[in-house]
Length: 413
Figure 1 (cartoon, one colour):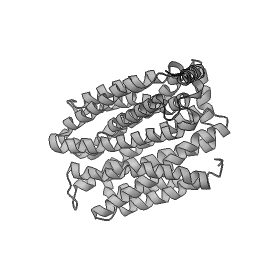
Figure 2 (cartoon, one colour):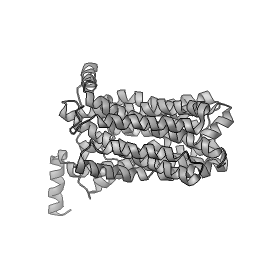
Figure 3 (cartoon, rainbow, N blue to C red):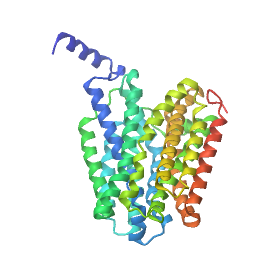
Figure 4 (cartoon, one colour):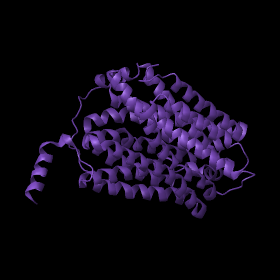
């Protein structure tokens, strides 16, 4: 070690609050670990979405009931976030990340051998509980451990991992299900998650900037109450819930539509429409730049209109129109979500609210919207077909855009 290296090492030890800088070995380990953690989390979360038609047939349940394998997982995740977020402030971030990934991988493998539909639903709900550990702490860990000048790009890579995981959870399982059935499909995703959990265990550096918060119920309740008292924050929570509900409602039921006439596609072929998902990573990044240029209040209404146009285009009985429509929906959704989720901590700071608590509540609303409207979409599909699902998704995105219009520059209603 050179004198310069030794001095830098001492400075790092003496001032951990400066955080890991881009280009350092520790920074690369953090980014790689959270990328893999996000991939595993969202691959498991959405691993049954492309399998819904096969699950409905094999278990002899309705199409609406099959969507519970997605909705119960997301609602369990949303409820657990209320507990895990404050808990991480007391016990630390890395411990919860490792525990979350290890338990989730094990439960994911158990889902592959579920003997009954009820057992599968119970396991999927438990999976949601286990998965809550990562989204609850990821951004807090990045804020505490990385240099301020590198946090935004690291967060972008983490979101990229979640987007890739969401796509993998749909494509990998659908392809495996076509070859060997849904049980092998879920086993494949479980093994992927297990490999990611091991890699994260080896890669993720221990916390250096974490400072435990006071334990107790009263401080947590006070923070929650303040985060629920600001009208602008409530609007942002609703925007997240409604827009996510529109996306999941469409994706939960599009497989049924593509299996039916006039398309008649198998699971593997139908799942290829999820290749539009990475477009969301691009649109989210571009929406962030646009928000900086013209203001956060401008982007969500425009993006909501793009999403509404997309779901309407899918009404055409042509595969290229369905793919184009889903692409526009994904682009519009991620622009809305990316802008709103980034607006929450900014507005929380302006309103004197805990940014971490406000961000947790946004995620709770986000996953609650996915759960409620994702399940409702199955019932709408059974009763009114794809036209009913399109009407529902368009209405949700329209309401989301209207709430955004009601927020002026700075986040005030």
